[in-house]
Image 1 (cartoon, rainbow, N blue to C red):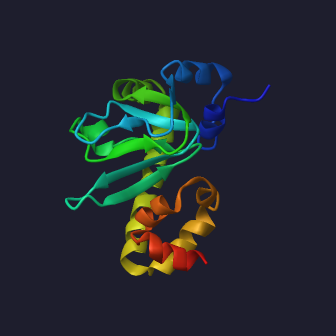
Image 2 (cartoon, rainbow, N blue to C red):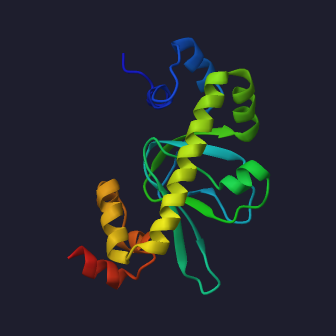
Length: 188
């Protein structure tokens, strides 16, 4: 029998028995969303964190001129929400919606905290995921500040080649901080 993909994901950091995993899974709720549906909307409270079983999402905001800025993509085995809102119970500064039809697992802040307190393994798991997320965010900021658009494009292409098959070029351009026309020149 094939293990649940979330168990495989957690087992990369901490090993779980089948019973431990079944207990953990009981705190998650399955969520299906269609393309263009939101899981978080700017200005609302993000009450859940989501783990992607299948599909692709984007986290973004619009500036005062109406320009979209994509902060993150989330594909299979990635976690997403507006973390400031989720952790600090403040209105979301970003929106997260589905680029494709998605199958997700959601967990509330309260259930995540309960699991963390009850199971040292889950505390270690989320601590490691938080650190990895911090490193990824730091690397993204550094890349935006020190790399050319072409270098950022190459880094993204090398790290996540499947993204280029699944995400419209307009969204990749927004993520890289370039125009669609500039991306077309880099892509050729």
